[in-house]
Image 1 (spheres, one colour):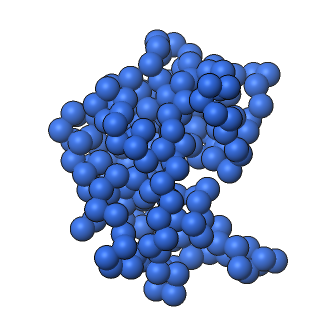
Image 2 (cartoon, rainbow, N blue to C red):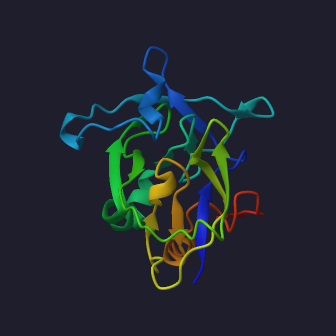
Image 3 (tube, rainbow, N blue to C red):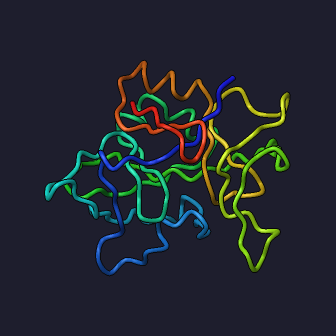
Length: 188
C-alpha cells in the first residue's frame, strides 16, 4: 500500500494573505479558531512563473506550507478532506467563490522513527523538523485518507492511494505526491 508526502510544485500558484493580514493565517503550526469564529481571509498570488501568473490548479500551496482546495477539489473530494481535517473558507483573489484552506486533524502514530530518515534541530535533537524518507509500521499505517504523524504534526501531510485515485478520476490538477521528501513527484 502506497503512502505519499503531499508536496508543492512551482508549476502552480502559491498564495499568501493579502497585505495587512497576519502571515500566520496560513502557518500550519499556528492554532486555528473553530470554523464558527473563522473569517475568510483574502489570499493573493505571491509566486510568478516567468513573469506571469501561474495557474492555481486544484491544490495550490501557500507561504505557510498549507494547502488550498479549489471548488472542484471540494466538490469531488470534500468528504475525504472533512473526515481527515477541517476545511476553512478563504477568498482567493481573482478565482471566485468556494476555495478552502485544508488543516489536517487526523494524527496517526505509525512512523517508524528508527527506520525513517529524519532531520532534527541541532540545539534540540529530540525535535524532528522534517521526515526525509518516511518508513511506516506495518499494520498501523492507514489504508485511506490523509494524516500527519505526532512526531512532526505541523510537518508533512501523508496521503494514501485512494486520494491519488480520486484526483485522477476527477481530473483534478496540481496534486503533488512523492514517496520521500526529495523523490520525483507525481503531479496530477
